[in-house]
Image (cartoon, rainbow, N blue to C red; front, side, top):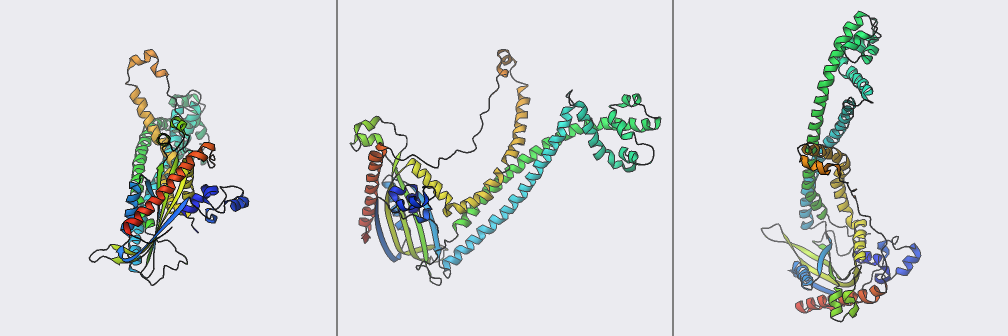
Length: 481
């Protein structure tokens, strides 16, 4: 069962907006542990309008209310937008075809994304291998590590280069029965052709070893340069593939989101939806927020005069939640593929007073609930696929940028060195990968409870009634309060 917005608000502040708060707190001992589905919601005030006309469309009902909320100075956002069509209706078939097209396009792009992703993985592994190999070449310039690096490169040369000669390779001859058992040891000890003559070896071994040492020294000079070039080319290719991946991710998101938005909500045993009837049910929820202006309220006398200069740590908002429940009959417009909906509309205006912490907590709870599951899956298949590799990618791409900066610094102003400019190193501040969210926020203090929330509640109730009253008078609709 999916929790409603009213239940989520009741969970955030159960003492104000839940009629069974004490029972649930006794049962679960903590607000965070209370399931939103068990909340029995209540509000500061509630007004309901019912409009039933199969000949007139439902769109004006929604947009008139939306425009009216904006005219009342409410910052409005849509929280819920669900629909369900009866399986036997033409509307169900039409949206099913559109959803299938979106799913096919999304699936195709996801296949391309996986191909590019595998390519990036292979490039990263190659770059790591190149980096390990290049480290041996760098260690050749170090006095302490030179001998170890040289032995490491000789081993690579024996295993990768000389081995292609088969039986005439150093290892092939040393492992054979031709009396060349000392050949490998002599090759590892000798640094150049002159060292070969200093070693106590027979002439046959020396005649084989001298050209091999010459080949190795030639290889080590050329392979180092070529490996550096390949390393730079691979880093450039990695950057190109990452940009391609970002482009594919940008393309696929609209298709995945559209496919998710075209999914019908399961209505379970709702009697308003019959399989063979031509019926649709729409659920829409709007939240309008108006921040409490402390200074103006103090000037107008709604708050004590001292509040005019008082600094408030968190703002309070007068909120109106407008919930639409539409039960309509889809009617296809001739010569067009669009549908219009006429039927019964139930509009409920509920008032709440919420502070910044509570609004933040409501957004967190919505993300945790089933309302945000589909978007989490979309983000998981798109954004997270890149973020999991981001550290590895950044390491190699930032390495290229640092090298470019080092090269450009060689042509810098020499006079800056006289004042010690280049001795000052910029300290890099550690990047914060995420902002830690406080799960438990502070309860109202005396001023907030008796003044700010009280005033926000009064204004919220007034705005909710005004919206209800203006709409009722404008349309002459029967009402239930």
